[in-house]
Length: 225
Image (spheres, rainbow, N blue to C red):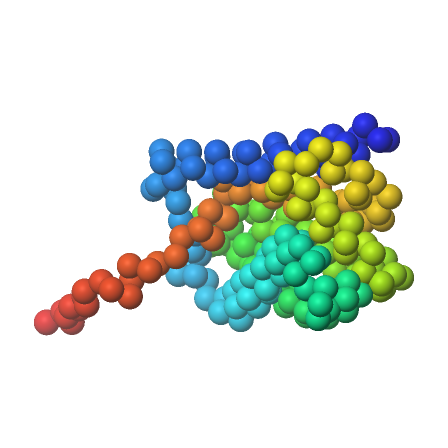
């Protein structure tokens, strides 16, 4: 069991990050035509705006919440916030954002799998990634249950130590989370797998910010005579 824990949470994270970086770079360099969101809004707009806003806002809050929460050293927030307070804040904000993302993601997944026009234009990767994301969001919400049993922030510190150890190339980081609840481990493993899938799906559009749009020249559109 110790070997499996080391493999999944001490070695697999580096494999996932390597695939994420190298695969994304290779796709941008060799397949820029495929670098797009493949929007299906033109095919079906029913509940599209509400679902898209709920999903994207929720996911962005969760993503940056994880990024800041896990990678911020404890010494930086210790003077004004205890680990327990940080954990409660994560539960409240993450719970609200997670609920938004699950509702929006569920609506988008249902639309993609049932709407004839959208379904016909969807690839296997399109269907798989939205389902995986919704499952990951549900797992994230389920982690609240074991977290409520220990609000002292001890588990939060373990995950922070693990994540910071990964990004600073420390050895033995899997030991930090060896004894945490299986729901946490499943959530982490699926998150790392999403990193692996990232370069090969529509998720790459997250890295594209249309900054040129604000400085481009106006387009002249005339009605037909």
